[in-house]
Length: 291
Image 1 (cartoon, helix red, strand yellow):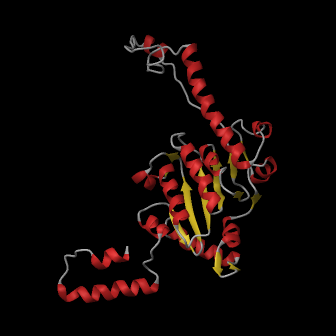
Image 2: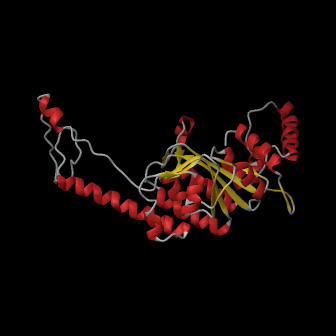
């Protein structure tokens, strides 16, 4: 980053060249421009910031595979989160990762890949998930692969399960005098086409797909949280739970605030941890930077 600033071709009046170089050098000395995978990822717009020895990653809103510019409208991208995690793993200055999550879940597309990356990165550098409101469904799927999960009083955790929805508008079309005629290559190719009747065989096929994703979900939580299938099935019915209940069921590791979590893992100086007050102040600063 710094090298490119100093060596790239510029359209600049020669009389100002030295002044610009001095400004860049001053910024480097002041720490305003830093180098490293996390710093680069942050400048590239990924949801990550560096707080001393900790990378803070933020997942907020419904999750889709590639959010891109839609992040400005409150969506979170699994691919962007994956890239942020990998940048933290590659940064020598980073010792731990705090993953702040507030999501109702989202698309299954890309989830298993992200879950695998979370597990791999956690094996290198501990990942601590902090719930910041809601951790549900797809969000819990990937969070279960982290080293620890904490939630604040009043947060909600769970909604373990998968779903899709089918709408049979055939009667409505019939009453309107419209007949939908699918022209396809098999019984299931036009399943769910507006105006066509949804058959029992088609419903069974959609159920097969939903059950397949549910099995992947259950297997991931078993693996990540060390829960037995019997324990997991008690809570894998779509319900959400308060933190104390979630801790009792084994879905999270404890009840504490984000400030407490950061205060416990962020090193301010060698061997010294941030106080809760200092962690809160740094957190407010990072929030102001729109993590």
